[in-house]
Image 1 (cartoon, rainbow, N blue to C red):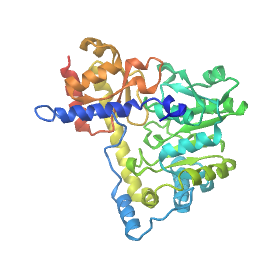
Image 2: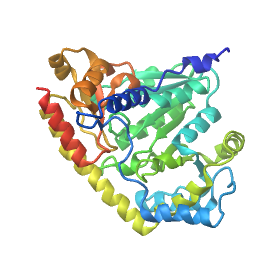
Image 3: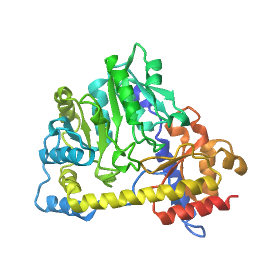
Image 4: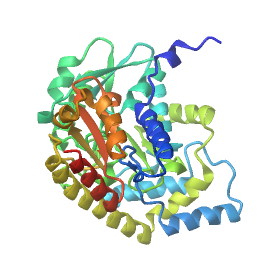
Length: 393
């Protein structure tokens, strides 16, 4: 059977490949070894709070399981709009919001609506692997631009201007970012958007970790800049609904008809039960619980990063959001007799029964020295992980 060139060009998602290897090793060593600690997947250890779970059960009991409109339940779009006003003080009309089958569907719809074959999209290196593959799936080309620790591993307006070429269509950014947990300063983001707009391009920004910002300087949505920003968001991270596969997309109003046509044909609609459940995310009880959990994620970051550095890693930039630590493992890898974060990751699984993510998923610019730790796990697991790292000497 002939496989399409498009499919052949998509690399494996190494985060998941490592997860499979870790799970296999954990099963094989289930007897006589400590359990595997998984700090490799970016999934909160919290699940949806009780009001959300109850809303889902109620929707099923009451038979509210038929298709919704392709752009989502009007009531949910309104509640997302109100959340922007309450949390960030910005006006994002519901008519500009499309509810999607996770942030993945939002990215796919945005790329298909905006990218033609051969178009180039500028992205920072390192950045989330799947984002560049959404560009490729639309027959575009992701152009990775090395971003240093001094730049918080983010693009700058100067780098965007220098890299802009005849085929450039726009930029795809993330703030806070996976894998680094760093955000783009609002003033710099505004300059990037101005540079893109002058050239007739589009600014897409992945904001799925936006609710998990820990510093006032960075905790702002790009949508505050103007109504031409395209923002991708999700109920997975801040709202702790990973497997519910529900997200949303905010676009300029003129783009909505094309987006709706694509959504109708490709997805019909997002999960109806998940949408009814998500209405309860914006109840006072739920919002209070999400903020309490955000405080826990911050406490984990504040404890874990210094401990990582004491254990022999270097964290060049302290993350200001999300739940990741982008750590240089070179010194410890050398002590273990391995080279590069890929081999180091598997050595760590074997010696310490600790799973992390090697940097190769996230780009080419020096990512071979880095691993990504997820601090979405419990404090007990984080403490045990540090003890095991210290035991490596």
